Length: 98
Picture 1 (cartoon, rainbow, N blue to C red):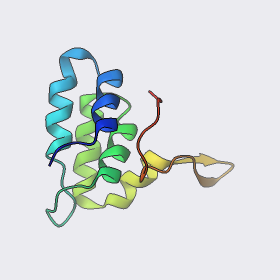
Picture 2: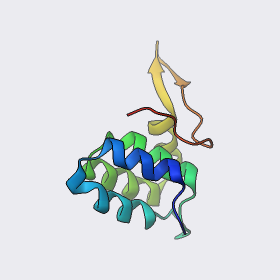
Picture 3: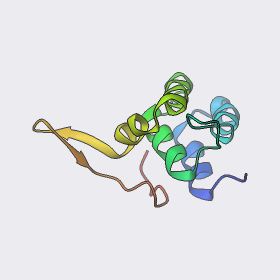
C-alpha cells in the first residue's frame, strides 16, 4: 500500500535524515492485532506518539499489534486535569506539526 502523502511529509520533517528510510519501511509494514495492515489513522497515531525516534516508533508499532486503542490514545489525546482530552483527529491528514 502506498503511504499517504502527509505521512511521508511528517517523516521527512520529523525524523533525522539518516533514519527516514527506516521510518518509512517500518510504518509501511505496520499491522494491527489480527495481522491486517494498519490504516492511515493508526500509522499517524504511531508516528505522532513516537516523537520522531526509531525506538519510539518500534515501541508504538509493537503496541499496535497488541491493542491499537493504546496507540490512538498516545497519538490523539493528552491528559489535562486528570482527564484525557482529544487534541487531534488523525482520521485526517497530519498538519504541519513536528
